[in-house]
Image (cartoon, rainbow, N blue to C red; front, side):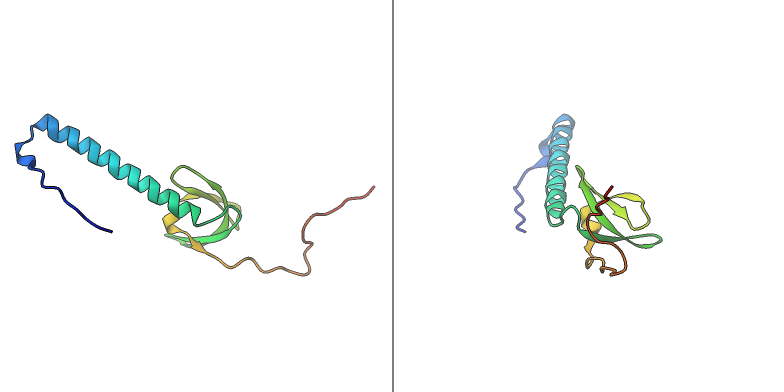
Length: 109
């Protein structure tokens, strides 16, 4: 990431000009943050198994939805979480239990 700082003499700016400059800087930072979050979201796909850490430990679940700034994860215990994509880690797919039915169940009758 390159960092180029223009020589802006802010000492000569009025309070109104400084406030306007601040608003533009904050708006630009928000836009960059949203773009980074969006890019992080695209690194994951809906239906993918993920995990993230909370103050009570790791939560595992399935990514179910992209939101504006977060993704929705349905945890293994059925809780819905809105999580920053920066906090997500991939999890290996859940192992298949041969004793449980897989796929579609067809009911006849």
